[in-house]
Length: 133
Image (cartoon, one colour):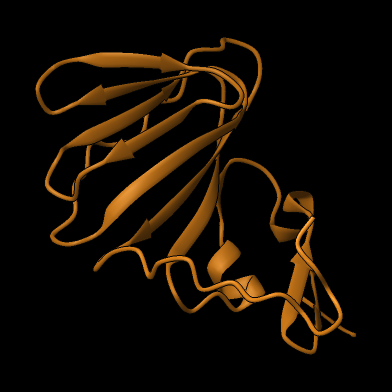
């Protein structure tokens, strides 16, 4: 395995720890560091009480996963949703969204996965010698 920018890469795979992909608040470039090509994916570390700018996309649907902390999503229609660890939010491309860390003392961390053009279906195959359990 070769080590590169916090990721360890092998034949057909890459692994990393979030802490190895950057320090302090801001983006952790998961897609780039792990060589993901089928979709976009980043982790964001939000400092206490920080709110992102509002944004939307032309084509990319996004799925947000809250890893730690408590965040509030504010959507273009004015509604808000609070999510804690394990919380999920799917947002259509054209829907405006803003994320705010509700903690006054700790970072919040969430992962965003984005893509377009749909699900490829169930294409998993058992490896040679494996049977269903």
